[in-house]
Amino acid sequence: MGRVSESLDERHVRFIESQRLFFVATAPLDPAGHVNLSPKGFDSFRILDPRTVAYLDLTGSGIETVAHLRQNGRICLMFCAFEGPPKILRLHGRGEVVEAAEPGYDALAERFPRLEAARSVIRVRLTRVAESCGFGVPLYQYQGEREHYAQFARSLSPEKFLALKGSLNARSLDGLPGLAPAAPPPVQEAG
Image 1 (cartoon, rainbow, N blue to C red):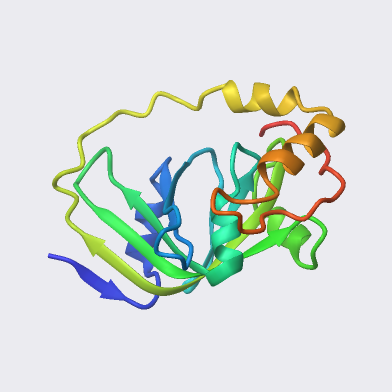
Image 2 (spheres, one colour):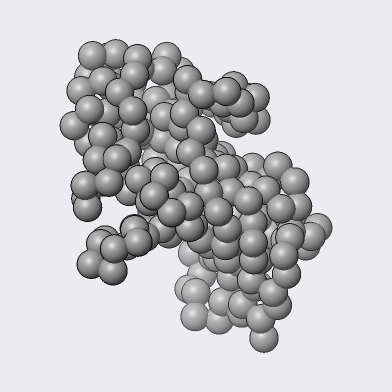
């Protein structure tokens, strides 16, 4: 039932563009370390070319994906059809973290809507694109984006942002380095 390729084709692009949610999975090298799986919403995913994708990484309660990518680069992104024909698409690859102060960040960030407290862009060079049936994925109907994140991000003064970054985004659950301390990015309006 499944198909595997090394890059995205037009069929994959159409499917990805119709999804409003995707999942990101990473893991540390230590077998006793914590595997991480995170849902991602908003308009935060972009296809850069048939073998490269990126997503806007928002400030949150942890830094697992960033820490794992910095340690070993392994990542898998998964899209599921919650409406329409059943399908799952997994994008395996090597990810890198591009922080706001790094070269290339501005060019990547321009591809996304301006979202409050964006902390980095995750760029992934694809090594495997795998489709499967998705027969076990239930049907759900999209009702809209939650307002909670925009309210949370607007509540962060530059000082609160630095404190959050320093306390929750400096190290992963397993003690791996996360984000470097730096000046906060400007708080932007959700678009």
